[in-house]
Image (cartoon, rainbow over all chains, first blue to last red; front, top):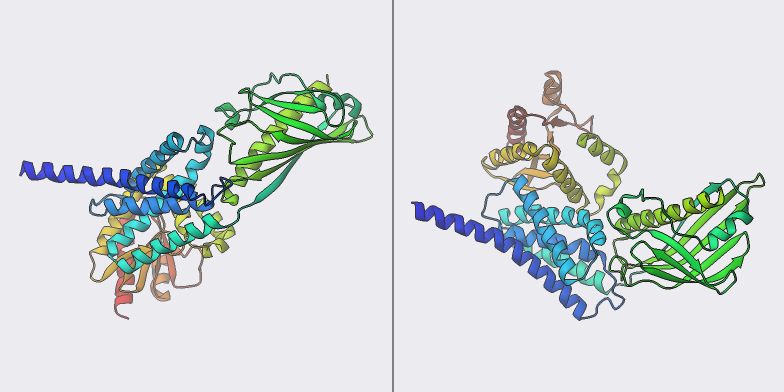
Length: 309
Length: 143
């Protein structure tokens, strides 16, 4: 009796473990094969990798857990654990940055849980036709999405009112000393690099500009519009090889526009153009906009402080 | 709080329910929320599911707009969202009677239909949920 119970417990443990290991291994293999075949030459992370594969991962684990009589609470917990394991493997094998993984985690958890509960119903019904057709559709969507063209560019603009004339603000727009103020934005607080300082090789068109971040990474820029007291536009000519941004986002161009309000105040407008390499847009663009906005505000508030002194 | 998020989503983002799997993903988010703040609710839903599945010719499936659906053969008996809202279709007379007894509310979207909603907030509601589902089961199984 005791031996039977022990064997059952051992089998249950094995099924649980296989659910975690096999689902992660299969997904890792699919990603590996996808990359080996250079389906996305530009290193674009398509939406399927964050949507279809986590669903598939949940379904695979549900197959291993089909006879375990797990409660819904356990399924949710195990799915989160499974998603966390996938995130850890992405950190180890795909070299993803920690902040990126924090950003991606809600998406992974939601879709792995969805897959687990789809799997629960699929394997309960023993409806093999449905199982084969659903998995085929998921794989078809994955392949189609992998070979499709992905391109998304966006511009984020912010403005701030400064109680100083444009000529007093201009020099701080072109270059500024270290920002000493602490970070307010939660992602900067947990370790995402924030803008610290900007240097310039000359106050003229074509001059080189460097935007230095808190972790020492530098964005090399070239001034392409130098309209004194009105417009400073610069192209990003080289961005750092930081795993948090590498292959995920390209910052293309930055711009500061100064508008004289005619009453001793100036409206400073900051614009940035970027290209996203991670999909789905409806998820990642929210983050990209939020991060860009907070980079803008940190720099613009510093310029405001320097100009109003 | 989770019910207000649910109602806001249904009211303002309801059009998105046509997107395949989006309802299920939303329900998964509800599951995460509930498993953190009221984990016992998921156990109560499991209890209801277990009981309904023990009835003859019943199966469980995924509701197209998110949640667990109970079927008698191919016909729907009712469905339950992971925030504890049970939706069941009854005839109007039974619906009125149950509303008068203060046991259920009109459906959270289709107020004028025969659908009712029961908000499962404590363990005692399991009994009411099963009584209502049994009424629907009898109605559906009798054709």
